[in-house]
Length: 122
Figure 1 (cartoon, one colour):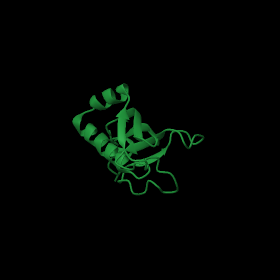
Figure 2: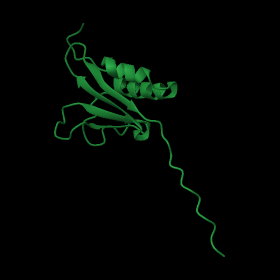
Figure 3: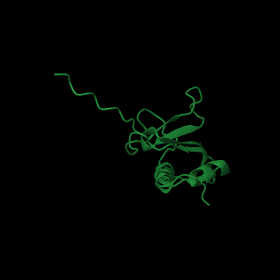
Figure 4: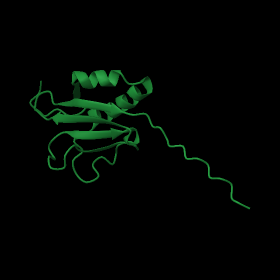
């Protein structure tokens, strides 16, 4: 152990119900969650503080506070263009800082099928 503050990659721990939720997802969704996880554990600041701090996330991912009135509280990482999210907090302690995932949600995209317009009357 060193006395210096540790940096990425961060440790990640899951609440049991969040882990069960992740494991219940279809394989393609679990892969998307794993990609989101990889972005979190390698981020310099997992809270993505500041203006456009999450700008380097892949397209379809963004981070924001769960409640704007609690800027130091839990965060939501939206992924898959908003069809899924992780609710997490980051414990920035000196020894063994880690990310704790509270909730995982994903819903498969179901694009609306609009009926084709009727042919124009002649």
